[in-house]
Length: 423
Ligand code: ATP
Image 1: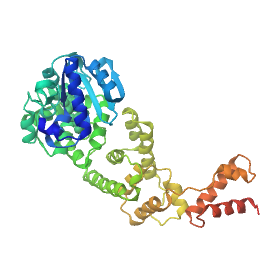
Image 2 (image 1 turned 30 degrees about the vertical axis):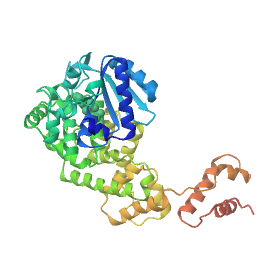
Image 3 (image 1 turned 120 degrees about the horizontal axis):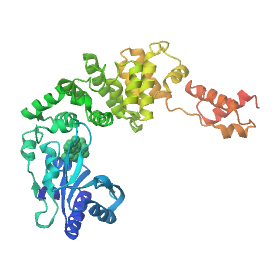
Image 4 (image 1 turned 45 degrees about the vertical axis):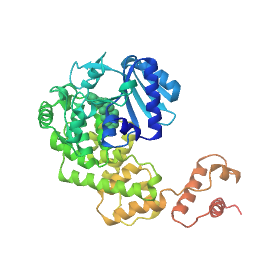
């Protein structure tokens, strides 16, 4: 692996060198592990490094932080630390450990152990390889479970028969890696995965862990494929009763993919869009408002995400919304502006009607970013006291800008004067 390490970016090479020097100084064995090693072999860039230390991981982490860290977060209970380096690389450092599971779906008990123990507790062979960073063994691949062969043969394989029972998140992880790399599931792994699904283990998962897994799935490149595969192997009911993979849902997710691409490649690309949330809104499209509220509550979604999901639903439910008619700019602004980008893109994906689509695109392209140049302070300088009148005036100016009857600061000021009957 020395040759592959030598081909990495300057930042990564210098970090690895620093760790190698420190591990010899500290007299502990240090290894690159997990997804970073997998991606290194696959030739995929990965800037999140996972490190395992045989010895005192926390002391190693603190010393490394002193050399090149920008920030460090230490989790004493698990003897792990996360460092962000000055070069903006993320490092997760752990003390080698073994684990035992009290019951499916909950976090395991942790006991310190050897590198082999640490690799044995991992999800798949392709994620259970390590590269030594110590002295004479620097760059050697440690591959106890045939991970390299599985990578070559494009296979996802668990390390022992109880793997999915110990931790059902591995079910969705298996689907994620399978779809991401275009791999297949090893025959026995697929059999055991289906057994675990039959035992309804996904239903027993803690909701916050399931939420994090679903979000990771939706953050992949083309989530529609992942959801389809998830449905093929597990159904979607375990996420929430009422979520069914009808052909219409498949179509909607694919359309969302198209709209997200349009949005991010268009002139709006500088605007932040949380694409995963648009897919989530799509996935939940069949739920009633009441169920949707319960979903957001049970999964303890962030307040702002809950708000965005519910605003989409409320918008779609409002019978009086006239999106299918050519709308006056001010009215279009009034109904669309409370929606987040995520909700707007979801509405766009749902709408087949040409006029409705034109209204939405027009709102985004022409009206969305219009803001008056004048503000409360400027109006106060004209002798108006603080109060609701100021807001009313600003609204009128804003409407005139949206209607394109005025464009410049001077024209705005003229309008304010006219409203106030000031010469
Ligand atoms: P990604 O590219 O999606 O970040 P990753 O493999 O780096 O993939 P992480 O979730 O960051 O994934 O996990 C890091 C490593 O920790 C994995 O490579 C795997 O070895 C181990 N791991 C993560 N989750 C589990 C799990 N549920 N069970 C066992 N091992 C796990």
